[in-house]
Length: 149
Image 1 (cartoon, rainbow, N blue to C red):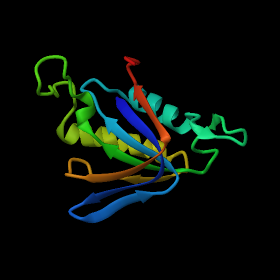
Image 2 (image 1 turned 30 degrees about the horizontal axis):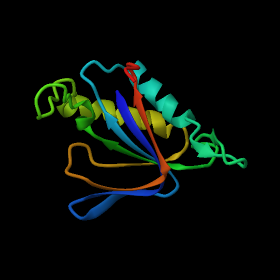
Image 3 (image 1 turned 30 degrees about the vertical axis):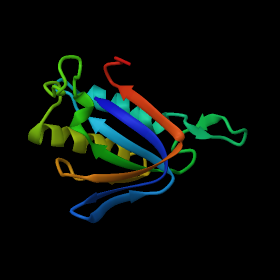
Image 4 (image 1 turned 135 degrees about the vertical axis):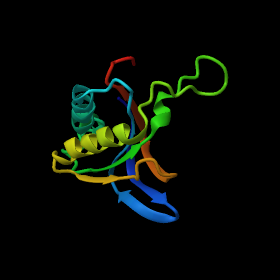
């Protein structure tokens, strides 16, 4: 599982010109699901996101996690995080899990995050979404459950 985590002042997602998810201070999380992801991958990435210390403390150091600042999360599925561009000019998406199986894993991931008690909004799996991201900092962190980076 891969995640692009952005600290935001606000973020929203629209489908067919209708806002379906919107947050203020918190994290915009783009999630990519791999063919061989397991529950352990989901739990690893969820734990990292919930406990990642990327919010400023009283000394202006990135020392607080999203729970400390009572932030919000917007979680969006994005299979293109598994686009392999090493050969040619068109990304190869063979590593990305597709279809109903990916949707089930995405929903399990969202449920794991919701158990933290934080406000969680989502996009619509498989839809053509427009995402507005007001990056704070900017702070952008990449996670990979297989620890490839």
